[in-house]
Image (cartoon, rainbow, N blue to C red):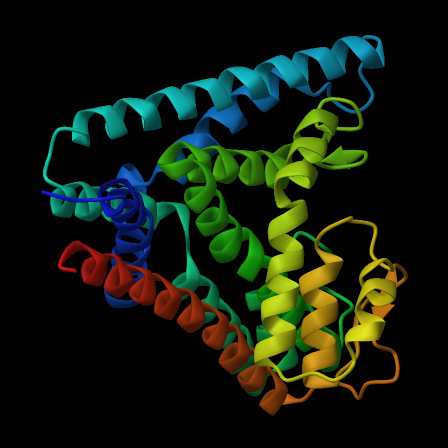
Length: 328
């Protein structure tokens, strides 16, 4: 079917770019699958079950920290291995199918591992609720963030929504696609497991009555490692597509957050919009910027949409190039 050096190049290119295009198209048209079919929901179910057996209850006598850490690492590794094995099995089942069917099948399976439409709609919903009232805005924001929202004013609600958009643009779109390009469906699935584990286990101290100081440490570090390069790629895309001229400030601003990664897309978004984004008592990104207004939420969504669109265009360009080589 293929000739010259192009066979392998075309085959590999098609099985990376085409599924990305399929996944983004499904996301745009239909959004998330039902919970009972959603692999991230399944990952969360495992992590919830295991977490109840790992993290000691606050106030209970705790085993040594190293022992709790080891149990958390082992539970993470078992879950990650299961996710990768299942993904490898699915890829193996598709391997004998025609390339177009492999690409379609991989795109359908990749879709639940990314979530642009849901992220966009949730951020829009926060702004819409905030337009009704401050309590409504706080209540809607609580769907997106784990921080206490009860004392936030309108500007802080908006800042939190824009920060969440920037951070999750990486976690829910760019990073899964990056790891899909690097390691196929198993890579994307492993990243999504790691990111979900960090969201559920990666806390310093108490959460939902349990002490995660040691139990979630492995999960937090694993997510840091897997997110390191994608977070900086996301920041670069936001900077380029946002036409920001303040590149030199990005590393210093990104370093203000406790996370080694989330500060990069958040700082890039703040600089591109020329707004200040803050978590009270923790950090302030681009303090010289103005307080964000409703129009800035719309601008942030537009900029994030450009990043997703650029990824879709890149996938399309690779497909066209590969097709051109096939018929050359």
